[in-house]
Image 1 (cartoon, rainbow, N blue to C red):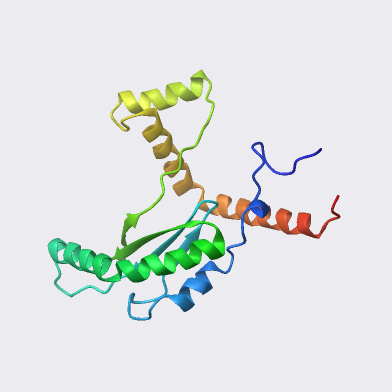
Image 2 (cartoon, one colour):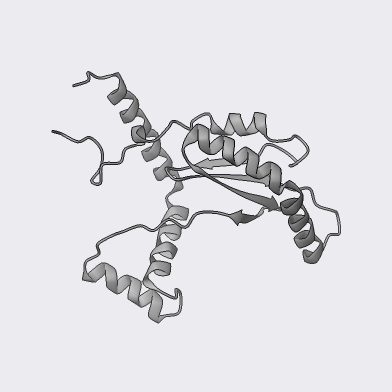
Length: 177
């Protein structure tokens, strides 16, 4: 029996479609929560919803922290209700955050363990980052490296994701066994 997808068997077609999640959240979120439309990021495990909070003109960092804390507490029950609905619809956990003057603060989000096998040259890279104090552990070093690569290859990764979506769409149109 031939198994489609990458090693490990996962392919985007294996999880519920969440392509309409930004629109769904746009229609579901109260209009007075954020200054504009919330940003909705989706992956296999999680949907992250981040909205921009209004700020005062001469607001200091303590006032900003207070505004974020107030929003988090006053919206908690509604956010939990919306998250439950989205989790039932999309089969993913929902994480929340806010953005203030371009700085995002996540309230809760998943840290998903990822198993990998590395050969000595790759382990040496991680150990160098740990020894230099850039990271506390190999796991932190790997996370740091992934973030760095992601920052420098966003356009390429976007094209790759788009191509993967097209492959999944073509696979769905093909013959079934």
